[in-house]
Length: 325
Ligand SMILES: [Zn+2]
Image (cartoon, rainbow, N blue to C red; front, side):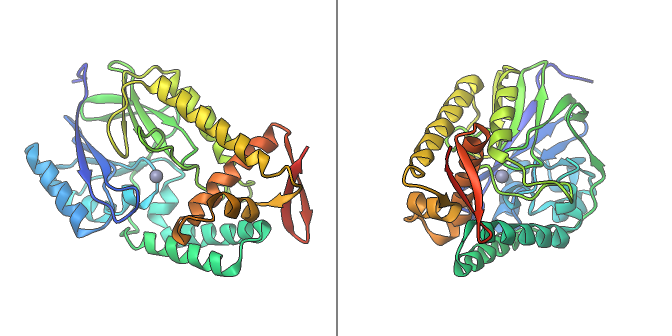
């Protein structure tokens, strides 16, 4: 039976990360589906158990697990939950390697990131700090486990009596999917759109072995507009409260990125600069553990300015410098 309105329960669980709690969504009906599972901590597990109990369920009742993207706060508990529930895991093809072969995925990411840092003139101590932080984050995921089915742009998936349309929306993460129910106008946005936080477009290698580095902020802006044009009635996020007015939030986010890009542009008025230069000038005050996100943020906006033809790159002793066109 397909119901007009999805029955959706929000279960907020704690994470050890700066972002705070993460929202998991229980989609009631057939198959009883859990969207995202939370980090692998005793506190998150207990909060999930309590949340399910509140609606009359336990973990073993879950019939399907969907993962929105590969970030640890969303997937850490997946092996444990899938094992107890004996439930299939469904996710995007780009999420699959992070779940099935996490060591290889991590080595690939680290090798790529070292290359980015070399080109950006990031000091060695800082690279070590970033790698230690990334390794610490991965301690909160318990993997590997096989993925039963992959879903991609244009597919539909039945979850909790609702046929959800899948949208692949790279930006915050290259593998992120949103699920949309056009009948009720309900969007499950994960970290693509968050009410109180402008999600970072995170530096990642290409999902294809030979591909060039994805221009994540450009993709992000493109897919935010695309999702806004669906005119969702309501969007449920990976963090924080639901979004009532998706269009105006997207306009705010795009205006924010525009302003940030203009600010970054002014840092190049004194002449050529590399990524680490600009990151330190803008974010010198933030803690070392946050420098990876700061690098991602600055590089995203440099990509935007470069795509607009306002910044031009040049290599000097294998470091990438940009200057105003
Ligand atoms: Zn995320």
